[in-house]
Length: 283
Image (cartoon, rainbow, N blue to C red; front, side, top):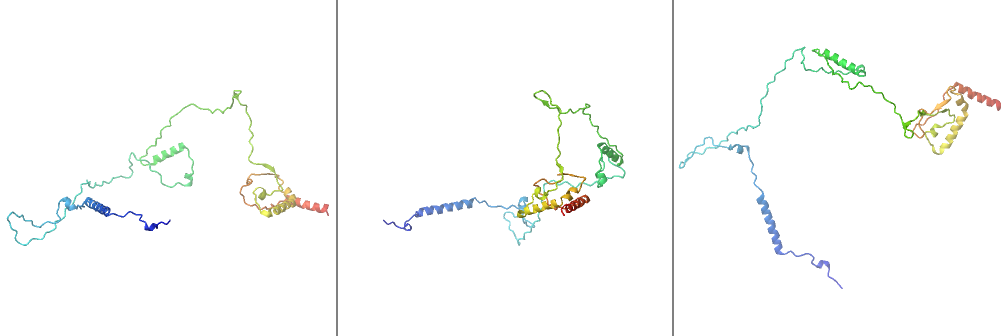
């Protein structure tokens, strides 16, 4: 079974002449309503408000009923504009009366002048008590013209009773009596130990790692300390103790420390004695 093509079918409604006429009439009425609602704009000028015409004849002559004007018509002349005066009150300028002051006189209610000079280090870092501060203000007030006296109000006495702080006593709730006095041991924040002769702080404390070269470097440092063991053991004989004060905590970021041997006479003597003794025992 065959059907007609969709293009051959009419899918839109045909426009009727009556509907088109109604649309045109509605649009015309809307345009007329908008045009009639627009009011005319009247521009007011200053002359129209004041009642002064823009121009007036120079010599106006009245014309009575039945009179005939003879002669050429005179050309109109423009009347001068009138100055509009604002209705806002404008006070007149007050006269300036200068104040006369004489040298050596100061008003009764004048305050002492402030010192605008920059203080030096001795004055800036000076420590004074409250009583000394009040005394300095009184001396500066006497130096001012007039020699007034600086009077400070007296501090009120709040109370004359003396309070004594009682130490806190901890009570035992079971026995209902204070706890016995106990001694608390306070441990220091550092460790005191003997000197470590085989130590690698860069690898053990700081945590440096050189990858595959790490085992070889550690073995080399160990044999270096073993060869100089007599020198390290005999140096600094007056201090055989060491602490961790000033050292970085394990794992903290710290710089790579390059070991440097300190010169020691006792260490050199000990190292030479061990070498000579070894050569003597094992020729």
